[in-house]
Image (cartoon, rainbow, N blue to C red; front, side, top):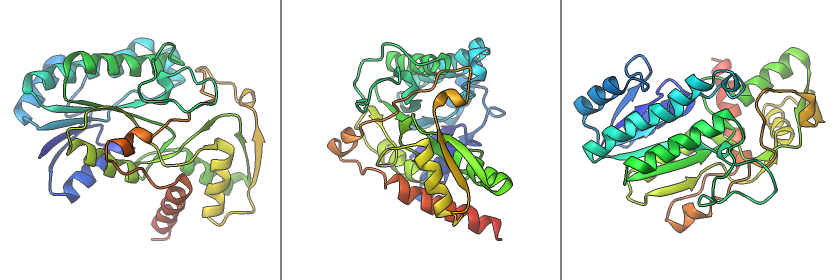
Length: 287
């Protein structure tokens, strides 16, 4: 199968390409330099010439706070860019997978969000733009996958785990919010699931994170434990200790039962994923 992957220089796109190649598929990994997704004509040219069997769309505007000021650019990339790709996928009759986020929901309550829950009030500009992308995809493509993820970490690029390890070494103490609950998502684990999906015809909307839930505070504690940095002092604080422009969800819990119902394997626990990832980072540092 020939699969085109956008956002290849990001955490997820990088690992998806590796997983596709590992299974013998032809992976075409593209960054913004190779295909500006906001340029409809460029998208049509590149996709038509590539003639993929499927597109896994990982590219996105993800600067959540900056999006509150950069509204038009955020919308242009996440909504219009996705629509540009979806239009061509419809013409080519190929599958399309779109990576979305729990931010499409309002972030309130304690019940895990279900894939088929109605989206009524996205949390912020970023969340709205990602939901607009979901809507565009469903408008044009029949063979679609929408996969909502959260708290992403991987080898390629910056993330919460790397930030915690750096701050722990520099300061010896960190303050982390304890009133936002969700699930970390390791891109190495997620990419296996995404390729399983794209190889199938079980289309629809899914939620995919590592198993189990935690607060950012609990996540930080697990990171330092995995790194053998028990001396780092971790203080739990409320969200108002860190004023930000874009509202953050208190509830990022997402139900993954639909994965099992459709025959897909759920991801390993977030603790297991954290331990493997931290070990990988430490081995890289020691080389």
